[in-house]
Length: 162
DNA sequence: CGTTTTTGACCCGCGC
DNA sequence: GCGCGGGTCAAAAACG
Image 1 (cartoon, chains in turn blue, brown, green):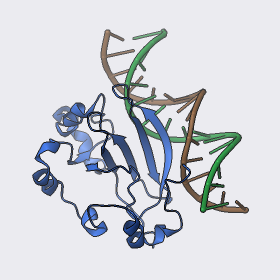
Image 2 (cartoon, helix red, strand yellow):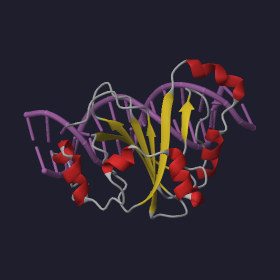
Image 3 (cartoon, chains in turn red, brown, blue):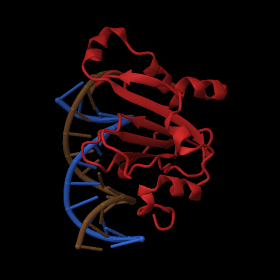
Image 4 (cartoon, chains in turn green, cyan, yellow):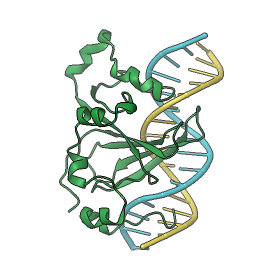
């Protein structure tokens, strides 16, 4: 990075932060997004947007986006893990040139990997706040480089950066 | 100066 | 048993 990070000190003010970006939605709307609503608004998105209670060792996303559908189809054979911990998993498919979508939290990149089926790199982000098990996975669409698939994992256990 | 980014290496699960 | 795929960590560098 060198000039693609218009944030850093303004993380405390997500409002002004967003004014700088070309977000098609408002921060509040973005946070209260309903997976069901998204499906209605984006019928072409298939099952890319979903909210599932994942379990450790449940179904890993292997392959391309087509495999993501498998994640929705959890296996009943290991449903006993459900009582363990509920992990919220939300995937967003947004048409934007920027992949670093600021949601008011601080994200620290902890890894970059190349998908074997695409020349698109996959970025792994994590909440900089300690105690926040929230993880973010950002990947570009294979078919539409203009689209960005952002997958949020976990819930924020700390107040906003404000 | 602190924080974050970056890249490579390492680790884990499972498939064959 | 080894290889593959994916995911994570870690040390150093870069940036504000």
